[in-house]
Length: 308
Ligand code: ING
Image 1 (cartoon, rainbow, N blue to C red):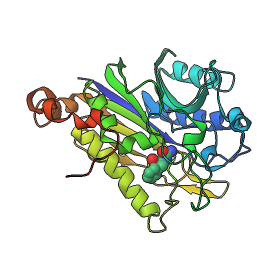
Image 2 (image 1 turned 45 degrees about the vertical axis):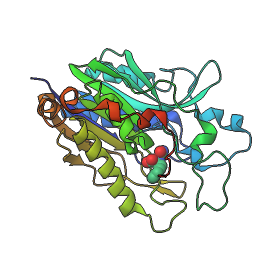
Image 3 (image 1 turned 180 degrees about the horizontal axis):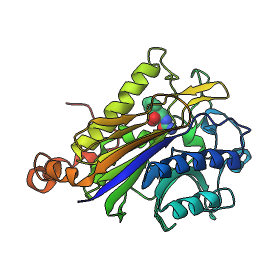
Image 4 (image 1 turned 90 degrees about the vertical axis):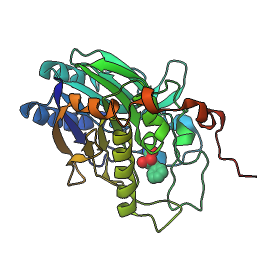
């Protein structure tokens, strides 16, 4: 019987001029609150340490290198590692990574209760665009500031649970979930920063954004018999609004916990990971039911072809 008390630590807006130390203090407050409730694993959002700066255009990308971490842990985040170790808590959070080779990634790490970085994941699916596009109501320049990740989707056994990571837009792609599912994942943690307005369509506002966010999370969890945590950085950052809606989803695709606000907020659930086994051994028994001889297009094609 493997059970863990798991939590999503939703983070409200981080303003451009807010220091990493101030953000880490907010993260520590949620970690302490989680510990008081017996939480054993806590997930923080994508790019937890800084404002969502890909909304801003800058000609010389090097001007934005100050949003990136060149080592991890570092002075600003060491208190987080120390507190988690003191609490015996596993955790994950996202940050912007600048490697010694000068490569920029949108990264998330999985850290064991002993303080060991067990997974480094670099965001695969970068939404938006790389150049300034005036026709958009706001910019979304992740393709300008980050490289597509080079890690792929991996699973590691931590605290007795097969855990995997993804980041934000990744949750919208079934490939993300299935590659993790094919590694027997039991808990997928996904941080996100999702603008509440589509920058090319006035028809797509917060309600539809929340719907598609939950649809993606519930379908992914159900179709791969896994628990899932989606944790937002949300609310307003320098006048720009992002949806909240952090959720914890069970292996049947049901939301078992949901954030109610758009600020710093902890949501908690008791996860019984033995519940993954039923789906994985019946309707989603991959070995018994999948027919890979018919799936070739998924890795042979990037874009869609047209019928004759
Ligand atoms: N944000 C958004 C996300 O995928 C987005 C961007 C929203 C793309 C809605 C497509 C549709 O949640 C990030 N950071 O990926």
